[in-house]
Image (cartoon, helix red, strand yellow):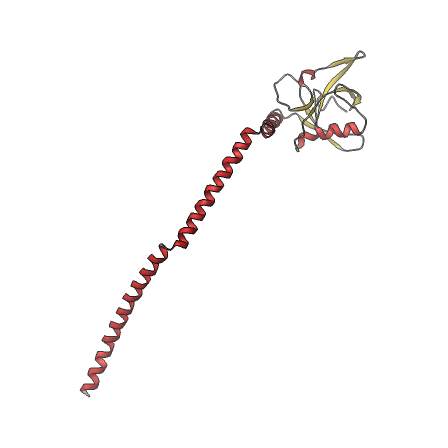
Length: 202
């Protein structure tokens, strides 16, 4: 009986020792593999690859900026946008925009501009210097600037052909087309700019 009890008391102690030794071995092996993986060339290649991608992206951005600065057409486009923003800001500040219905019931967009305050309008045809009341055959003709799409529509309808052409009875007034705004793919392509307010037009 003594021998049996001695063996049972020794077994738990040796089990704990085995567990402790096994834990230490696992920690040592895990540490070894951690550092081995950290210094793995594949990982270094990956980080070098990501750094290379970042550098490539910076080079692309730098190249694009260089193109923007050196390309006159793109620069001109940027300047055009600034001009349209100026017109847009002017419209917001002055709150002189209004609509009218034409003979077919379509809604047309107008902007009342007296011509006295400075404003940037990027024109494809004509000039702001002619934005004044004209006298033709002893009758007053008010200046009219058109958006690109509106000008195309009115030309197709035979209302005018060239800058300087008069239009009689345009919403009850006589007007002369003095300018066409450059195409901007915005609401300005449909606008009519005139020194006549909503009450002046039928």
